Length: 175
Image (cartoon, rainbow, N blue to C red; front, side, top):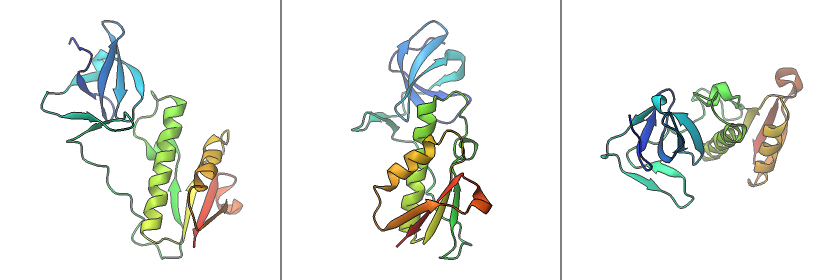
């Protein structure tokens, strides 16, 4: 199939939509995905969307599909007691369907966005405590979480209990 710059596409092997921003070869195109990242894709992994789907750019130049359903609202499990910690695993395989073809920056950005959504849901549902499992790794995600927590008022954060989580989790208390 011949794609043109500006064509609206859907990915064959992963969730999401995008717009073709450049034709690299007959077999490879550059796509701006719905998160605003430009990624090279083989044309055989893309599906051309009909012109019926309206596409718009928001103020941050992140593409959004008007007819795309919003992700399900993030809610704490109903069985949690109000003083019980809500556990959120931020490992990629738990928060992202297809991450093998993503760059490190895109993976980290996705994890941080998910972290923020969970923080906001915990605040909205008046949770007292939330534990984010970030893993050990290089420590980049942990440092970014600690930095992002500075944007929140009336919280306290600390390393989660070592016996249960090792060095790979942060607990946040809400006041």
